[in-house]
Length: 276
Ligand code: SAM
Image (cartoon, rainbow, N blue to C red; front, side, top):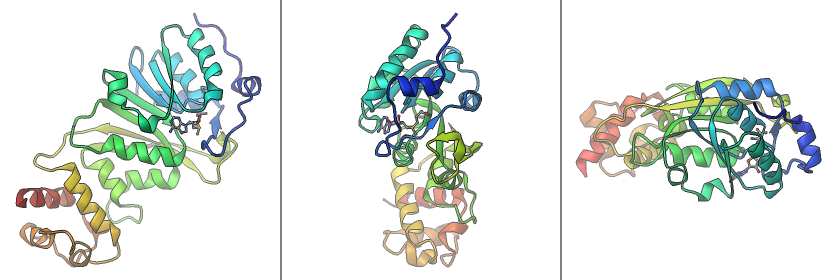
Protein backbone atom coordinates (compact mmCIF):
# COMPACT_ATOMS: atom_id res chain seq x y z
CA UNK A 1 0.00 0.00 0.00
CA UNK A 2 1.53 3.33 -1.03
CA UNK A 3 1.50 6.41 1.19
CA UNK A 4 -1.09 9.10 0.29
CA UNK A 5 0.53 11.78 -1.85
CA UNK A 6 0.12 15.54 -1.32
CA UNK A 7 -1.85 17.45 -3.99
CA UNK A 8 0.40 18.45 -6.92
CA UNK A 9 -0.27 22.14 -6.32
CA UNK A 10 1.17 21.74 -2.79
CA UNK A 11 4.26 20.05 -4.24
CA UNK A 12 4.77 23.03 -6.55
CA UNK A 13 4.56 25.47 -3.63
CA UNK A 14 6.71 23.38 -1.27
CA UNK A 15 9.56 22.99 -3.77
CA UNK A 16 9.21 26.44 -5.37
CA UNK A 17 8.54 25.00 -8.83
CA UNK A 18 7.30 28.11 -10.58
CA UNK A 19 6.87 27.20 -14.26
CA UNK A 20 9.92 28.17 -16.30
CA UNK A 21 9.17 29.50 -19.77
CA UNK A 22 12.70 28.72 -20.93
CA UNK A 23 12.17 25.03 -20.09
CA UNK A 24 8.74 25.00 -21.76
CA UNK A 25 7.02 24.15 -18.51
CA UNK A 26 3.23 23.86 -18.55
CA UNK A 27 2.15 21.52 -15.79
CA UNK A 28 -0.86 19.22 -15.57
CA UNK A 29 -2.58 18.86 -12.19
CA UNK A 30 -5.85 17.15 -13.14
CA UNK A 31 -5.31 13.64 -11.80
CA UNK A 32 -8.29 12.24 -13.75
CA UNK A 33 -6.86 13.53 -17.01
CA UNK A 34 -3.40 12.24 -16.08
CA UNK A 35 -4.88 8.79 -15.35
CA UNK A 36 -6.59 8.83 -18.78
CA UNK A 37 -3.28 9.68 -20.47
CA UNK A 38 -1.46 6.91 -18.57
CA UNK A 39 -4.15 4.44 -19.70
CA UNK A 40 -3.72 5.16 -23.44
CA UNK A 41 -1.06 2.46 -24.09
CA UNK A 42 -3.09 -0.15 -22.17
CA UNK A 43 -2.15 -2.09 -19.04
CA UNK A 44 1.25 -0.93 -17.76
CA UNK A 45 1.52 -3.28 -14.76
CA UNK A 46 5.15 -4.39 -14.51
CA UNK A 47 6.06 -2.71 -17.83
CA UNK A 48 9.11 -0.53 -18.41
CA UNK A 49 8.15 3.07 -19.20
CA UNK A 50 10.31 5.99 -20.24
CA UNK A 51 8.92 9.38 -19.24
CA UNK A 52 10.71 12.44 -20.53
CA UNK A 53 10.19 15.67 -18.57
CA UNK A 54 8.27 14.52 -15.47
CA UNK A 55 8.44 18.01 -13.90
CA UNK A 56 6.68 17.86 -10.51
CA UNK A 57 5.54 14.32 -11.37
CA UNK A 58 1.83 14.46 -12.22
CA UNK A 59 1.97 11.98 -15.09
CA UNK A 60 4.64 10.02 -13.22
CA UNK A 61 2.21 9.41 -10.36
CA UNK A 62 -0.41 8.11 -12.75
CA UNK A 63 2.12 5.75 -14.35
CA UNK A 64 3.32 4.48 -10.97
CA UNK A 65 -0.27 3.93 -9.81
CA UNK A 66 -0.75 1.87 -12.98
CA UNK A 67 2.10 -0.40 -11.81
CA UNK A 68 4.69 0.75 -14.37
CA UNK A 69 8.43 0.66 -13.72
CA UNK A 70 9.31 4.21 -14.70
CA UNK A 71 12.58 5.77 -15.82
CA UNK A 72 12.10 9.54 -15.83
CA UNK A 73 14.54 11.99 -17.44
CA UNK A 74 14.29 15.54 -16.13
CA UNK A 75 16.66 18.40 -16.81
CA UNK A 76 15.27 20.85 -14.26
CA UNK A 77 17.23 20.21 -11.04
CA UNK A 78 14.52 21.97 -9.01
CA UNK A 79 12.15 19.06 -9.68
CA UNK A 80 14.47 16.37 -8.32
CA UNK A 81 13.45 16.56 -4.60
CA UNK A 82 9.76 16.23 -5.53
CA UNK A 83 10.59 13.24 -7.74
CA UNK A 84 12.71 11.68 -4.96
CA UNK A 85 9.63 11.88 -2.74
CA UNK A 86 7.67 9.96 -5.39
CA UNK A 87 10.44 7.38 -5.57
CA UNK A 88 10.08 6.82 -1.81
CA UNK A 89 6.32 6.47 -2.11
CA UNK A 90 6.64 3.78 -4.83
CA UNK A 91 9.68 1.76 -3.73
CA UNK A 92 11.62 0.15 -6.58
CA UNK A 93 9.30 1.59 -9.25
CA UNK A 94 10.89 4.95 -10.15
CA UNK A 95 14.37 5.75 -11.40
CA UNK A 96 15.09 9.44 -12.01
CA UNK A 97 17.81 10.52 -14.41
CA UNK A 98 18.87 14.15 -14.16
CA UNK A 99 19.80 15.29 -17.64
CA UNK A 100 18.83 16.33 -21.15
CA UNK A 101 16.78 13.67 -22.96
CA UNK A 102 18.11 14.92 -26.30
CA UNK A 103 21.63 13.91 -25.29
CA UNK A 104 20.89 10.41 -23.99
CA UNK A 105 20.68 7.04 -25.75
CA UNK A 106 17.25 5.83 -24.64
CA UNK A 107 17.60 2.17 -25.73
CA UNK A 108 20.87 1.88 -23.84
CA UNK A 109 19.38 3.57 -20.79
CA UNK A 110 16.35 1.25 -20.74
CA UNK A 111 18.07 -2.02 -21.73
CA UNK A 112 14.70 -3.68 -22.49
CA UNK A 113 11.60 -2.90 -24.59
CA UNK A 114 9.77 0.14 -23.22
CA UNK A 115 6.72 2.33 -23.70
CA UNK A 116 7.27 6.09 -23.91
CA UNK A 117 4.84 8.52 -22.27
CA UNK A 118 5.56 12.20 -22.11
CA UNK A 119 4.21 15.72 -21.85
CA UNK A 120 7.12 17.61 -23.35
CA UNK A 121 7.91 21.14 -24.39
CA UNK A 122 6.81 21.28 -28.01
CA UNK A 123 10.21 21.88 -29.60
CA UNK A 124 11.86 19.05 -27.64
CA UNK A 125 8.87 16.78 -28.33
CA UNK A 126 9.13 17.17 -32.09
CA UNK A 127 12.93 16.63 -32.08
CA UNK A 128 12.58 13.44 -30.03
CA UNK A 129 9.63 12.26 -32.14
CA UNK A 130 11.68 12.56 -35.33
CA UNK A 131 14.52 10.70 -33.65
CA UNK A 132 12.28 7.90 -32.29
CA UNK A 133 10.59 7.43 -35.68
CA UNK A 134 13.74 7.72 -37.80
CA UNK A 135 16.66 5.41 -38.38
CA UNK A 136 17.09 2.12 -40.21
CA UNK A 137 16.63 -0.18 -37.19
CA UNK A 138 13.04 -1.44 -37.07
CA UNK A 139 11.15 -2.49 -35.02
CA UNK A 140 12.48 0.07 -32.56
CA UNK A 141 13.29 -0.59 -28.88
CA UNK A 142 10.11 1.29 -27.87
CA UNK A 143 6.76 -0.49 -28.03
CA UNK A 144 4.62 2.65 -28.18
CA UNK A 145 4.84 6.45 -27.99
CA UNK A 146 2.12 8.38 -26.13
CA UNK A 147 3.00 12.04 -26.43
CA UNK A 148 1.49 15.46 -25.92
CA UNK A 149 1.79 17.87 -28.85
CA UNK A 150 0.22 21.14 -29.73
CA UNK A 151 -2.94 20.18 -31.60
CA UNK A 152 -1.73 21.49 -34.94
CA UNK A 153 1.37 19.25 -34.78
CA UNK A 154 -0.75 16.29 -33.61
CA UNK A 155 -2.95 16.80 -36.68
CA UNK A 156 0.11 16.76 -38.93
CA UNK A 157 1.28 13.49 -37.39
CA UNK A 158 -2.03 11.69 -38.04
CA UNK A 159 -2.88 13.51 -41.31
CA UNK A 160 -4.22 11.64 -44.33
CA UNK A 161 -3.12 12.44 -47.91
CA UNK A 162 -4.79 15.40 -49.64
CA UNK A 163 -5.38 17.24 -46.35
CA UNK A 164 -3.65 20.54 -45.56
CA UNK A 165 -1.90 18.98 -42.56
CA UNK A 166 -0.38 16.14 -44.62
CA UNK A 167 3.38 16.36 -44.97
CA UNK A 168 6.75 14.96 -43.90
CA UNK A 169 5.71 14.40 -40.30
CA UNK A 170 2.66 12.33 -41.33
CA UNK A 171 4.65 10.15 -43.72
CA UNK A 172 7.38 9.67 -41.08
CA UNK A 173 4.78 8.65 -38.48
CA UNK A 174 2.69 6.38 -40.70
CA UNK A 175 4.89 4.52 -43.20
CA UNK A 176 5.89 1.83 -40.68
CA UNK A 177 3.77 2.71 -37.65
CA UNK A 178 0.17 3.52 -36.80
CA UNK A 179 -0.57 6.97 -35.41
CA UNK A 180 -3.83 8.09 -33.82
CA UNK A 181 -5.08 11.11 -31.98
CA UNK A 182 -5.97 9.70 -28.54
CA UNK A 183 -7.10 12.64 -26.35
CA UNK A 184 -7.70 16.32 -27.09
CA UNK A 185 -6.49 18.47 -24.20
CA UNK A 186 -7.88 21.97 -23.64
CA UNK A 187 -5.30 24.69 -22.99
CA UNK A 188 -6.96 25.44 -19.64
CA UNK A 189 -5.87 22.02 -18.34
CA UNK A 190 -2.30 23.35 -18.05
CA UNK A 191 -0.70 25.66 -15.48
CA UNK A 192 0.13 28.15 -16.90
CA UNK A 193 -2.16 27.66 -19.93
CA UNK A 194 -0.29 27.75 -23.25
CA UNK A 195 -1.68 29.84 -26.14
CA UNK A 196 -2.78 26.80 -28.17
CA UNK A 197 -4.78 23.59 -27.74
CA UNK A 198 -2.98 20.28 -27.29
CA UNK A 199 -3.56 16.62 -28.04
CA UNK A 200 -2.14 13.26 -27.08
CA UNK A 201 -0.89 11.20 -30.01
CA UNK A 202 -0.40 7.45 -29.72
CA UNK A 203 1.98 5.64 -32.07
CA UNK A 204 2.71 1.93 -32.35
CA UNK A 205 5.31 0.33 -34.63
CA UNK A 206 4.02 -1.70 -37.61
CA UNK A 207 5.77 -3.82 -40.22
CA UNK A 208 8.40 -1.98 -42.25
CA UNK A 209 8.08 -2.32 -46.03
CA UNK A 210 11.00 -4.28 -47.44
CA UNK A 211 13.80 -2.76 -49.49
CA UNK A 212 13.25 0.87 -48.44
CA UNK A 213 15.81 2.91 -46.61
CA UNK A 214 14.39 5.34 -44.06
CA UNK A 215 17.01 7.84 -45.13
CA UNK A 216 15.92 7.66 -48.78
CA UNK A 217 12.27 8.10 -47.84
CA UNK A 218 13.27 11.12 -45.77
CA UNK A 219 15.15 12.61 -48.74
CA UNK A 220 12.15 12.10 -51.03
CA UNK A 221 9.63 13.67 -48.64
CA UNK A 222 12.01 16.52 -47.83
CA UNK A 223 12.32 17.39 -51.52
CA UNK A 224 8.65 16.79 -52.35
CA UNK A 225 7.15 18.72 -49.41
CA UNK A 226 9.89 21.36 -49.49
CA UNK A 227 7.88 22.83 -52.37
CA UNK A 228 4.49 21.32 -51.60
CA UNK A 229 2.49 23.57 -53.94
CA UNK A 230 4.69 22.69 -56.92
CA UNK A 231 4.29 19.74 -59.26
CA UNK A 232 6.65 16.92 -58.45
CA UNK A 233 8.45 17.22 -61.76
CA UNK A 234 9.65 20.54 -60.32
CA UNK A 235 10.09 19.72 -56.62
CA UNK A 236 11.93 16.44 -57.27
CA UNK A 237 14.15 17.83 -60.03
CA UNK A 238 17.16 18.07 -57.70
CA UNK A 239 16.91 14.44 -56.55
CA UNK A 240 18.93 12.26 -58.94
CA UNK A 241 16.83 9.56 -60.62
CA UNK A 242 13.54 10.76 -59.10
CA UNK A 243 11.83 11.78 -62.36
CA UNK A 244 12.75 8.44 -64.00
CA UNK A 245 11.46 6.64 -60.89
CA UNK A 246 8.12 8.48 -61.13
CA UNK A 247 7.91 7.41 -64.76
CA UNK A 248 8.77 3.77 -64.01
CA UNK A 249 6.11 3.65 -61.30
CA UNK A 250 3.50 5.34 -63.49
CA UNK A 251 3.11 8.25 -61.05
CA UNK A 252 2.06 11.39 -62.92
CA UNK A 253 4.86 13.95 -62.43
CA UNK A 254 2.37 16.83 -62.64
CA UNK A 255 0.84 15.75 -59.32
CA UNK A 256 1.74 17.65 -56.14
CA UNK A 257 3.33 15.95 -53.12
CA UNK A 258 0.25 16.28 -50.94
CA UNK A 259 -1.78 14.08 -53.34
CA UNK A 260 0.57 11.09 -53.01
CA UNK A 261 -0.44 8.22 -50.73
CA UNK A 262 2.14 7.05 -48.22
CA UNK A 263 2.47 3.80 -50.20
CA UNK A 264 3.42 5.88 -53.28
CA UNK A 265 6.17 7.68 -51.36
CA UNK A 266 7.40 4.30 -50.12
CA UNK A 267 7.39 2.90 -53.69
CA UNK A 268 9.30 5.95 -54.89
CA UNK A 269 11.95 5.59 -52.17
CA UNK A 270 12.22 1.87 -52.93
CA UNK A 271 12.69 2.52 -56.64
CA UNK A 272 15.38 5.12 -55.88
CA UNK A 273 17.11 2.73 -53.46
CA UNK A 274 17.17 0.12 -56.29
CA UNK A 275 18.70 2.62 -58.73
CA UNK A 276 21.68 3.33 -56.45
N1 SAM B 1 5.19 16.10 -17.17
C1 SAM B 1 4.92 17.29 -16.38
C2 SAM B 1 3.43 17.58 -16.44
O1 SAM B 1 2.76 17.00 -17.29
O2 SAM B 1 2.97 18.38 -15.62
C3 SAM B 1 5.74 18.48 -16.90
C4 SAM B 1 5.46 18.92 -18.30
S1 SAM B 1 6.36 20.32 -18.86
C5 SAM B 1 5.45 20.68 -20.33
C6 SAM B 1 7.84 19.67 -19.59
C7 SAM B 1 8.93 19.16 -18.65
O3 SAM B 1 10.03 18.72 -19.47
C8 SAM B 1 9.52 20.18 -17.72
O4 SAM B 1 9.59 19.66 -16.41
C9 SAM B 1 10.93 20.49 -18.27
O5 SAM B 1 11.84 20.85 -17.26
C10 SAM B 1 11.27 19.16 -18.90
N2 SAM B 1 12.24 19.23 -20.00
C11 SAM B 1 12.35 20.20 -20.94
N3 SAM B 1 13.31 19.90 -21.84
C12 SAM B 1 13.82 18.70 -21.45
C13 SAM B 1 14.86 17.88 -21.96
N4 SAM B 1 15.54 18.21 -23.06
N5 SAM B 1 15.15 16.73 -21.31
C14 SAM B 1 14.46 16.38 -20.18
N6 SAM B 1 13.47 17.13 -19.65
C15 SAM B 1 13.16 18.27 -20.27
